[in-house]
Amino acid sequence: MEFKKLKSLAAGLGVSALVLAGCGGGESEGGSGSEGGDGGYPEMTITFSHNQPIESPEHVGAEKFKEVVEEQSEGNITVDVYPASQLGSLREQVESTQIGEINITMQPSAVVSPFVDDVKLIDLPYLWPKEAEEKYRVLDSDVGEEILDTLNSGGFEGLGFWPGGYKLFTTQNTAITSPEDMSGLTMRVMESPLLIAQYEHWGANAIPVPYAEVYNSLQQGVVDGQENPLQTIFLNNYHEVQNNIIESYHGTMTYLLMANQGWFDGLSEDVQELILDAEEQGKQAARENLSETEEDYRQQIIDSGVEYYELSDEEYEAFKEASEPFHEEVYNTPEQLELLEKVKAEIENN
Image 1: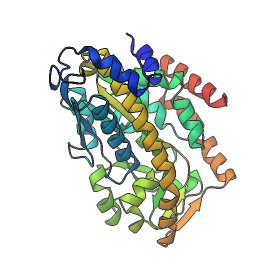
Image 2: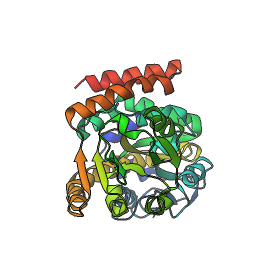
Image 3: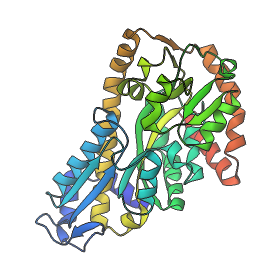
Image 4: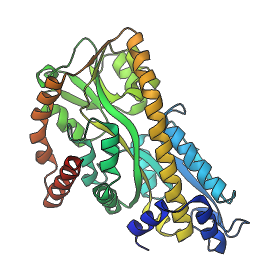
């Protein structure tokens, strides 16, 4: 069954239907597993890695994924979740998934883009709607499925888009309210050519710094600032070493839940459906948790005494106008331009 059809089918299946679908038993499912089991699913272990702390919405979603898989398989399938970069740096986790050492990983799209250039579309600045539900609607649409399909070229199976929130600028001693304020600043970014080019477009200098080293780099003045969503800033205490937090809505921190393609293709249809159902429930749990906690994170950051500022509508539009030409400069193959136009059309279709 084609993956798109399978995903559509899985979205419509309930828990009881999934359990019944698995009752036919089957072959070994690849990875670490063996046949059999009382519930009809093969005995196997799935490795699931991500970078965020256990308090994060991402980990809440990962734990929901684990719960669904283990309960619906009646314990035959075990999901071992490794949070907080336990299995390596962000790039190393992508590489390990590509070669099959990790079955499933959840990684920011910017970290995946050096492996699959087409997914850098997600990180184009000032492209996505400012309303989270509108952004999710576009990502969950047919054009979102097309973006996920591009992961196949890197040896991955795209499972879904998980939330991280909108990115903010943080700096030490510099308030950013216009692109001109970026001039001469040194900003930490993930290891992404697009993000480096984005800050150069605005007149800043971008330095890739590993996630585990961001706090120290900010504290020691190696970089003037960085970009991350509220929950990442709060849970990693970046506001302790930055005195300006600018809610800019300039980009989205969107995580790709993706599997090693060969491993996923080797699973039976029943197990694939189970994984897709668990992905949907995990993603929704993460999105709900982010929505519930984000305001609290924002208020605690404000209460810490930093300068907290949200771009006005006019300032937002000035940044957007300055950023739009950048889209087609960096996302410029015929196929990419076609996909970009589809995303823009879907955004307008609200």
